[in-house]
Image 1 (cartoon, rainbow, N blue to C red):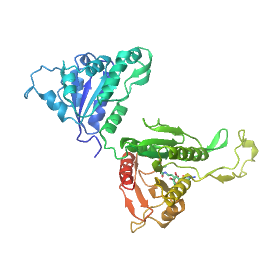
Image 2: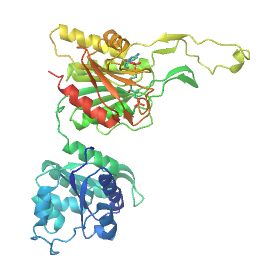
Image 3: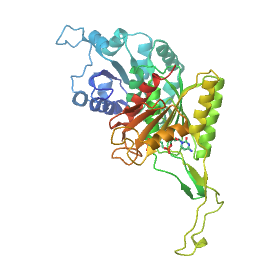
Image 4: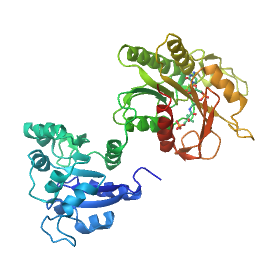
Length: 423
Ligand code: PMT
């Protein structure tokens, strides 16, 4: 069952051109299993129709405070109390002003005044309106009142101007809502995550790499962010933008990932040490021993002749961090939990359900607290897929096998599991 399944969400739509994007937000919420009710301002209904909103939400659309209701006329108060989340998307400059001023002259503003639970605002307007001192004052006031804002984003605006004012994309509004509602057991804790592949240059046009998409690491980072952690994500070349709110450091080679990871570890120990280092990256164990300055010519070998590529070993990031953590423990300090992922190509569990001896040896060699073992050749597992089946192997020898799950769910469960290992 997904996060939104059974949640009750009120989506309030203000009168701006971005109202068309809120239709997608309604669709996504319904698809994820949420129960949705729509409140549209009178101005919103100039941009989208009642019929569309009703069809997408599956409920009667509410717009007018004074339309007689089937119950006792107090349904705006009841709604304010009953919904798990109130999202206002798009929130126009006028709505922000009326909210900040504590107005209560229509259904939406009375609902807001009666609301004590989480409220998420997705502003959308022209860049000059957004930057206007009055709007900025209202934003500060609303934040001080405990309201959370997502966006607006930079980009091309409906009026043709370029700048900050675009409403955040519906999928990201959904994620912001999830973060707002999720419990925060990692609040105040820093987490270091590595993700994606590394690329090892051979010559200026060729490199050695692997099939990691970064999805597993992204899922772990999202789960950590939702749980309130401060996330540093060091990642190799991937096709996705980093999750909002993470401090992302892009690298290319294993050597760069090693240097970036160690430098983060060092700088963090001076301020706030990491509570956990979770290394999901598929780091190349080897790199070409010599990087050629120019493209290697096909004519440098005779047809049919074999050519040799000499390889050098890359530093082992996981083993280095685990060694540092173990030294910290010996010195009486509290080390972070150090977690590796193990990509195997044969059954990770033997016929008795135990983790294979080779995986146990890998954990001993790396010296980390936990290995998350996945068989990357099993259906639905490993590189690029949206799902994974993992078995956790703790240094105590204990194992936990999870079924095939969305990578998102693997990330959530992993963060839940790890929080119990923190001292
Ligand atoms: O990115 P996706 O497409 O979603 O795919 C996810 C995944 C298959 C990449 C992920 O689930 C996974 O298995 N990651 C680990 C891949 C790997 O490098 O496994 P390994 O068994 O070779 O290494 C074990 C651990 O040592 C890993 O935590 C790795 O980050 C680390 N390592 C390896 C070599 C090295 N030089 N330095 C390291 O830190």
